[in-house]
Image (cartoon, rainbow, N blue to C red; front, top):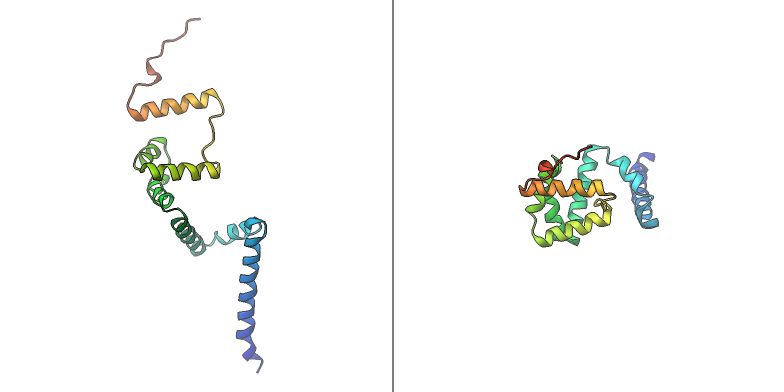
Length: 142
């Protein structure tokens, strides 16, 4: 007769697990749930499930951002500056605005910290436009 309680025990364990996950997601804005999700996302089907769920949530909250992310993901597989610039040029102005806002919110778009980084970014933009960059510089004499 004890075997009749096995389904109840399994169901109770599942309910307790989901309740714990809901509690962790509500407490401290999900900070305690992040390590659990990171561990679970090491499993292949769970990673795909989390990716599908996050894309669906983004599509509901911000459709322009979801469209921009779909277009940017083609360049994310080959993350060189030219491919990224090409993917950014395919975005509509509203998609670009949504993408830049999300990137700034995540901290992925750092302000150029020094002159060298700003000049390097300017050179990359000039090369992307097809203008000759710093190749025609004069050398300093010593």
